Length: 140
Image (tube, rainbow, N blue to C red):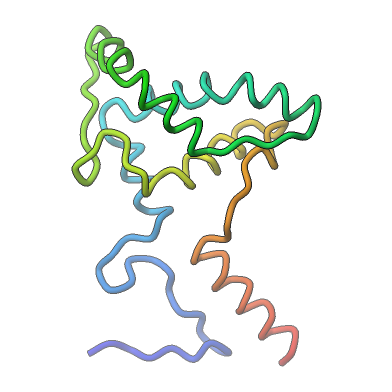
């Protein structure tokens, strides 16, 4: 039987709800896949020219454009990984799964402070819950 949580005393867990992983947990699991590091590397390479433009002008770029640029180079990425002895494993049926795109954007901006704000992001479920908890604490 599942336990019911009282938001005022015990915040509801945001991990593995209903047996499903949160986006953050999915991304962490994906990063452990063979070749994920190389795919992230190509995201950095594809985003770099747009990041320079952003720093200079404030003009943002779509993470979906970056993802599609990487997807366009996927054959090259596969070849590079194969030469390095890495296998581009599939995550939920795809080498480059669209559900991970927002987490890749967050990863890029977290690891490159000058890129913060480069991509427009929505709040994650975890962030929304945390915001609700903080709001409830303020009003309590």
